Length: 99
Image 1 (cartoon, rainbow, N blue to C red):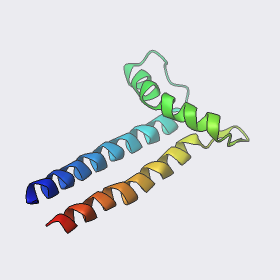
Image 2 (cartoon, helix red, strand yellow):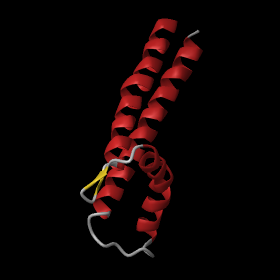
Image 3 (spheres, rainbow, N blue to C red):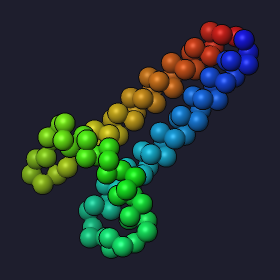
């Protein structure tokens, strides 16, 4: 059972890293939206293509657009923190119980 436990721990750690990286990508996208970036810059294009599908779904389902401020990155960041605390923590506890 320790092999399954180690696999679950490794999966939880990789998931935590992926969620953290995506959190920083969303933060970079929000910071870039405050200025007028060059739309042909490869970094700007990557940030938009990596975040726009999820941000668009959040904007469509939760219309929190007050006074010209887009709250969808904040909602996505809250969801990422929730997943990190709940899902990654649950996977670690499941792995601990399998020892």
